Length: 91
Image (tube, rainbow, N blue to C red):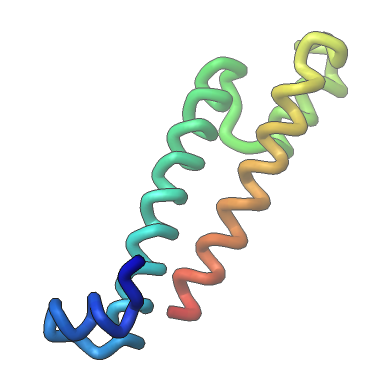
């Protein structure tokens, strides 16, 4: 198995620079996947965020039983997006 140091040396980079760029690329890729899933959920229900979705459920526009899984998926995806954005900012 190749080590970070070997790869960095072959790429003529510092190991910490390679690690930072790798993490940033991974996080941005993950963010794109999450945002596309959020877009599909928002489009399906005609909302912009999980708060709007929750409001529409409370107003009876969607049956809670039917939207239960999507609500929690929406909420988890938004939380994961915020976490990833926080880490991207730290890089």
